[in-house]
Amino acid sequence: MKRFTKPNWPLGAGCLLWAAMVQTAIGILPMVPSTGTAAAYAAVTLPNHAPADFIQVRPGTPKGSLETLTYHSKSIGVDRKAVVYTPPNYDPNQKYPVLYLMHGIGGNETHWTTLCAANKVLDNLIADKKAVPMIIVMPNGRASAEPPSSNFMADFNHYATFEKDLLQDLMPYIESRYPVKADRDHRAIAGLSMGGGQGLNFGINNIDKFAWVGGFSSAPNLQQPAVHIPKIQQAKDPLSLLWIGCGDKDNLITGSWNLHQALVKANLDHVWYVDTGGHEVMVWNNNLYLMAQMLFQPAGSVTPPPSIGSYNGEPVGGGFGGMGMAGGRGIGAGRGMMGGGASTELTARKEKGAAAPSGAAGKWLIKDGDGEIELELKPEGSRWTGTIENRQMPGAIEFKDGKVEGNQVSFSYVRQVNGQDMTISWTGTLTGDEIKFKREVGGGMGMPPAGRGAAPKTNQAE
Image (cartoon, rainbow, N blue to C red):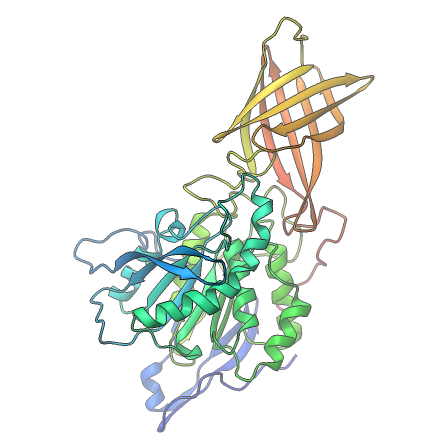
């Protein structure tokens, strides 16, 4: 492939600075020869991970401010909320670049400052002069006049329709109320999980409005490379930064990997950053810490970090682990039959009654977060069948190939999420009137089941 491309950012007269893009094991990294006054922008190479104290409140470090605002959405027909971070020493008479930062499914506008630590990350970076002072807008990325459903899958489409609210309602409101620079070169969008898909989708759909685009642990709402690549190629102006990051133990990494591979094949500049860890808060905070240092910087002044993790396209086992956690709960918490983590331990207790059978047969009640799941197990010859149902949701899921061998109980079933099959497996140990279960989610939500549609073995440096 061609290894060198033209620079993405023009600089002022008398300053020649260009970035030669060379692909490495983590993606495409800039090398920065410079002449003349460009020497002032000698490249700083980012570390492969944030320091241990990067989300700690430091005594004496100036702090930014958080404001919760309400704006009217004509697109949805209701008033909506967003949290806005203004940097330390904020001056309303000064113009700032702006980052729109999206949360994951099950979260809201508070997600990035309660579960995650966006404000602390930026406070410390700005104090260390590693990030440009910026305004961060953290909206509610679920665009609906109705309250959230107890079935998170019903909300998927609302995250796609937020694009209209963002462009037509929220951005004009922000630009009328805050001193933001209202042009693409000073506007960024990024997010985590479902918000990572939004960040990449909305950013690439609107390259005329966003020059800086990123997705962390992007969920299956991420559009296919065949959709994204032509838009990037045909854009009038190139992206200043396209960041794709994910943890190496996150089975949603397949979607990000596929986009990365397509970008490499098309010779399109981007950062591919593989973290260690799963679908979790530390990965998201770390990606923000690293990406924020590249936002709104002169071309080539910051060299992207080397990956700390590694990934070669093989499916990742287990589940998607806490996707878009809100208030510290996994997406399955209180919603039944779903995730809550790559592996979640739950206890089933037999429902009492005069006719309750002994052993594993019968009805069981499982407490899952704020919700309850009802499980019924029935022996049919050498196999066990049954149903599992969230009492807060209509309809039960049937399974037909369960097993009870001694005190070991297991069953599994498949659900469809966003057009993809997701296998949910339960294994447990029966003791009296209790079954200690381990629930695992896999095969879907961005991870093809083993042996079916798995990503080819590909060296990252190809």
